[in-house]
Image (tube, rainbow, N blue to C red; front, side, top):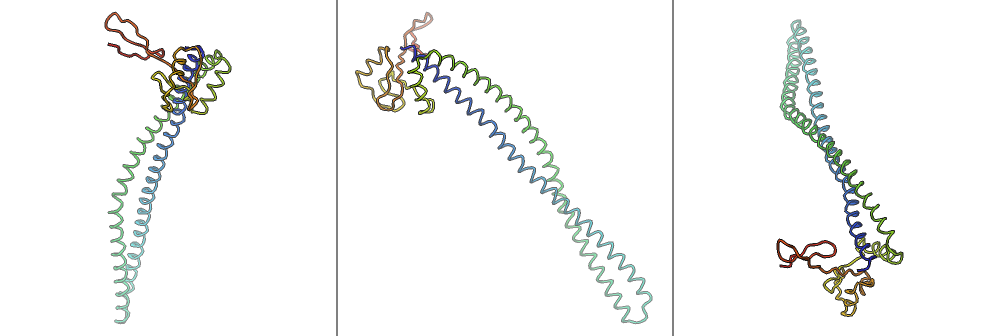
Length: 258
């Protein structure tokens, strides 16, 4: 196999791993954003529940003031009624007092209704506050984990890129240019395994003569259909003392030959 081909095969492996790292680095902030989005929604729901509870309490206070006002008015009317000189005056005071009593009952009924509603509201607020506190702790922990994971991935990516630059420096310029152009065109998939006589990327069957030339490994060949660099990588038999023969490809993959 050509030395250049060995080098660009390694480069493609590094590129594949580098792309995986880049995707993971890009994905982590999006995952955190989704978690924070849910957190914001839950926070808004909690604020709405708190506002409802506050509104409930405010209305109850207003109703209590209305009750006190009507009670004071009713007491004053009773004092005035005692000094009434005619039946018409007495009945007028009595009607006013009955109206006050009716208003007091109406406000008291509303207060009871509000009290009944306030209990589940208060329970919801308390439960939501506890759940939100736990959720915030989870989000904070996930943020720390994401930053740590991003730092690890970025370090690994930098190391891969350094290794790639070292390999690229050893590749002859025409082969490197071809590899880079195909990598850009095919999103990092510039080299196709052709060990079985077929381009594994576009699935074109390789002509017999081209396949024979490819097997000699003294030149670089490309697929006649997709233009990718063809890689002939047959398994190599190796004797193993503890068992039967085992084959390894030149890339290190193990194949059981027994």
